[in-house]
Image 1 (cartoon, each protein chain N blue to C red):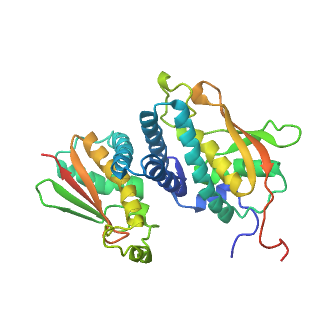
Image 2: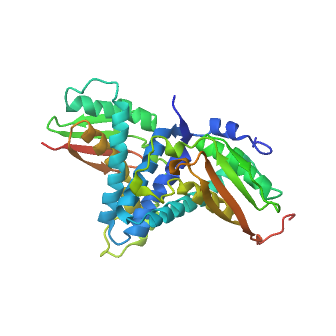
Image 3: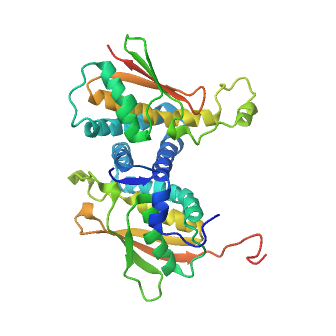
Length: 173
Length: 186
């Protein structure tokens, strides 16, 4: 086992990174904040992938590379594997983590959602927006890993039932 | 039963949730890199890293107090020892030492023997003036402010800038009197 640090170091650092970009730098431009947070994740994924695949033979196809993310990569980073993998065999993969570590301490208070009864505001609460901002980071990581393996793709996250989180990977043809 | 008295940094570190340090180190590196791209001015990057650290420090102090069982330190000397021996150990898994006290015991140096933030890091020439580890000084400043100590924390030696060690100078500026709505003995 290599070097370790307290989990709270990573948790608080990610929280502050998101707060910095979405709160201080681009408070009124969430799409710019999202792009920066995704870019940071991409960089991390790219570098981690480089380190974790050094000793392996090349992956023979997309599915092999995705399986690597589900098993080896997820275990290194989150100490568990992806719980469920689905694919339509046409370049879309859905990776479901039933207890995504970075969301396991997040809960969206239903009462705060009820406060916004003004029908003109979108149905998404502030908390839900903050969570989706946070998820650009792991989405960026996955895209970074796959891009390093020569697979260009787009990645999004679905958290309709917390703390389950599904990552949807669409490989670019 | 809750542990009585302070626990050693080693004991806490081995009992808390830990993660792969590569993720931590590479994420921090990616943040610094993105900030350098977005902000252009190195001075501004230093400032943002410090601010980020400050915000982290005001969160981590709670965990530090809860898990270490440390109670009120008798003086600033004891505080500095706690940061070096317990704080650095329980969060980063490294030890630090305290040296160079001034005569009135309000200013000292914390020397890091090992620094997980800089694994794999090399600074290009374009980053002259960058205090890469500025997040750490911010963390100490933020954490101490939550226990009523105003401090100034500056890097005096930095291996990435060609020095032989990582050394932080911690200077106590003011001890703010705590105002509780109750007395200690009630």
